[in-house]
Length: 476
Image (cartoon, rainbow, N blue to C red; front, top):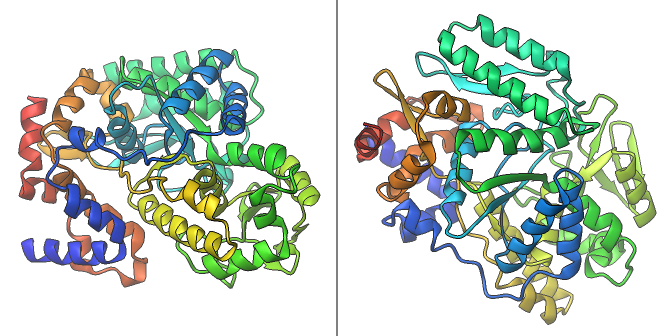
């Protein structure tokens, strides 16, 4: 196994250059120490217009008081997570990313600008309850029917009493839960839906924000509160209310002039997380079809075209398409806007690479446009803060598993304190190493995967590098 493991590191780190550098430079630190050493850059604070727009977007989902407190916290410490897929917070990936985020000192809220452009059948299963079976296999119970599984989270319809009853019934029949666990999980679902019923959301996206915040507090009482806001919502609001009305705004010129479009294509075509010259990914905005599925849009002159969608690439037409909910911004647009406004984004194994590469190319574009003022504004923004490390483990029998939020909730453990103490024992190196098999499956296409690497598991690596023994001691 040791030989295959060393080869796996070479393959993954060869494709994930920024992650490799983080592993080399910070691997010896424990997770708690690493988190509290994240760089916040040295730029000026966030602009009032950004904070005002953020506060308004949050107030559409949460209370005005919470929205104001989050904006105040961000004014002092401009740190957000861009790791999570929007949906019901429960999957091990996002339990871990928020746990890691939560160990940053002196935070009341964990603001997550989550990606709602993923589909309901994404591997994170954003519209489901996810849990580990008795034998340690990840399973799910979905709120949505299969006919909607290819719809984007941002276009999914709201959940109602019927969806809740469906899930309660499936939990009741599930052999992986004990009678006590069934009652505890059903009570959690009913309590959460009862509280959510006081709100009048017209889509699943807003509901998912509130469900996630509520679930998180049940999983980890006393932890900083998670605040989910779809990044697309915030960026769309900034584009329509700030950028489009101001023809002198730099991002208006970048997105809506011939010179800006030429430079976007010159600097970003083929970049990971952006768009290609063909029909892969999408140019600036994704389309949404009548079934709520995302559509690749290509640029043809001053038009965006794809699968029956045709939109003039001019301010008024784009604003109208946003209002009709037939487009939403791509990751490139989201990252460019966040970089422009000097927001420090925490990243997962992909984002630390994407953010860093996009920033470097953005700086090159600004150099060609002779904008030293903006270079000075954006260059200090940190893009290499990693927060997707493995930490939340439990044992199912003798097997080490990556725990979902539901698993942790049903365990009855004082989990936040337990994992905080564990974070002071586990090194970043150990945690990243245990994540390598999962990263490999994400970044290497199925047809190119080596069977020897596929046989490696998080559990086996944790046993080999000493991580499992530290976890046993913490859980004993």
